[in-house]
Structure formats: structure tokens, C-alpha cells
Length: 404
Image 1 (cartoon, rainbow, N blue to C red):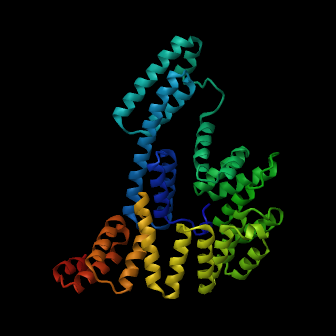
Image 2 (image 1 turned 135 degrees about the vertical axis):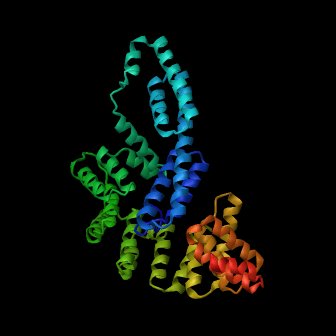
């Protein structure tokens, strides 16, 4: 999980952006999973955001079609190299994913070619393929779970990803359930993994704690994490998770003590310094938070995590101009790298410009642009657009947004 996202989690729009990045990188399976996570979250937490829900469904469909096409193309290469079993699996997945009639016909043609090649090169195996039997003993459900698990692991740090791939099947099932929001199933599977596995897999406890928190079992999760840190005092994720819990429970002093007690080499790392800065921010010790975030920027270089933290700190301190300028820098960075701008950042930037008494055509155009990207918050944008048109003397356009 990302920094400071353990309990509150990312907003559906933030998860959507992650999906967009995967889609742009042609990681269509990973994109589909992120869009599905986003739509599940918005339906359970913010069902009134119908526009967002429909947009996500559209992106899920596009991801499935792109993934189906990729599977179909990959299967042709596998057939050429005589990897018939893998090719058939991909074609079956592609057929399940796509709703495109033309692509379904192409898949059928490729399947026909596969069966012809099998009959020509390995006549004894033809019956197994044509009858739907698997030439290898791997069950289709397990294959699906393994693929799904691998996609989920793609976003993890390399060392964690490697470790998780070596964990037992109960853990993998629990990890899938956790990412699908099936927290009770996740707790059961992780507990089974801890109790029955002969494999050394200490990080199961971190994922179990995550599932417990999502079931509001904070005390049990806290106890597990505190015990874990006693034995694994260099595992940064445990500190992040436990601090997150302390913040939610209002026990900020314990977070400070926890960070102070961690090994000096760990304490100097970027994640732990950011944890300390965020803890100060949560305690409304804004001057200390500012100093810590600036020190992080000096020691580790500028990045969006630090910039966001500084911006919200300056905003809380009442230094709106500095906060506005930092959000502008973040947006300029997004423009240069070609990544879609976060609607939250766009909104904060616009709101701070408005709060700094800017009443200009560029700000009006910004609000009109954000309105197109984020229609679920249209009422708030209508108010700003109405005010800007009014102050610019365009009462006719202002009236349109007043009555909208």
C-alpha cells in the first residue's frame, strides 16, 4: 500500500488515475483491476457519483477489449512456437473478455488454426484440446487466480513482490480477497496461512492487519503490528501502518514515540521522516511539519508526495499563496510528463486562486475545464463560475449557472 493510504485509502478518482497510467503503459489487466476497485469503492461509499460510475464502467469495458485483443495476438505467437496449451488458455480468456463480434470471429479462426496445427504436429493430443480437457493438470480457476495475483503484485516493490510469489496458496487467496474488499475472507485465509504453512512468510501479518482494520478490529490489528515490529524493527511498512492507526485513534504521541524508537538507520529514511512530518501535521504542529517536509525535499529531492504535504501544510497555516504556487508546480509537472492531472489538485489550485481574490478569465476557463472532468461536484463549480461571471459583468452567463 502507498504512503499514508493504509486506513483512509485512495479516493476512487485517485485509483482511476492509477488505472489510466496502467492503460497508457498497455498493462490492460492491471488497468482493469484498478478500474474495478475504483467502481466498487465509489458504489459503496459515494453511490451518488453516477457520472464517475458510468465513466469507470466504460474504462473497464475498454480494458477488457484491449486485453482480449492482446491475448488474441499473443496466442498467435504461441501457436507459431508450438505452445498450444498456453495459446488455448489465452484464446479462451479473450473470448470471455470481449463483446466485440468481429474479435470473437477472429478468435474462432485462431482456435481453428490451433487445432489444425495440433492435429498436424501432435495428433495424440488433439482429443484433449477438442474435448475441452487440459493437457496439463492445472485447474482453470487456479490459473486465473495466479494471473490475477501476479497482476496485483505488479504495483508492489520488487523485494515484496518476489517474497509474495513464494508464499503459499492460502496467502495468495487472502491477498486477492483483500484487494477485492472481501475482508472477512481475507482474514480467514491469512490466518490459515500463518497457522498451517511450513514456509517462512512473516509479511502475512501486515496484510492480515490491513484486513482487520477494514473490519474495524483496530485493537487486534494494533497488537499484531506492535508485536511484529518487536521482531522486525526495520520493516518500514509496519511503521507506516501503525502510525496510520495511531492517527485515526487520536494517539499521536504514541506515533512520535514509535518513530523515536526505531533504529537510527531506519529513522533517517524518506518514509520515516515523512511519517514524522505527517504526525506533526496531524497534531497541528505546522511549523515543525513544514521544517520536516522542507528537510525531506533537501535530503531526498523534490517529488509530488513532499509537494502535496507542503501545500496542505501551508494551506493550514493560512499561507494560501505558497500553497497555490506549490499546486501549480505539481500541475506543471503533470503537464510535462503527459500524465492526466489529479482532479483533487486541480480543484485545490482553482480554489486557492479564488481565495487569493483572483477574478480572471483564465480562472473562469479553469473552472469550466474542471467541470467537464469532475461533473459529480458540478454544484460547487457552478457557484464559482456564477461568481466569476458576475464580477466580470457578464450577468447573462452568470444567470445560466445560477439556475443550473
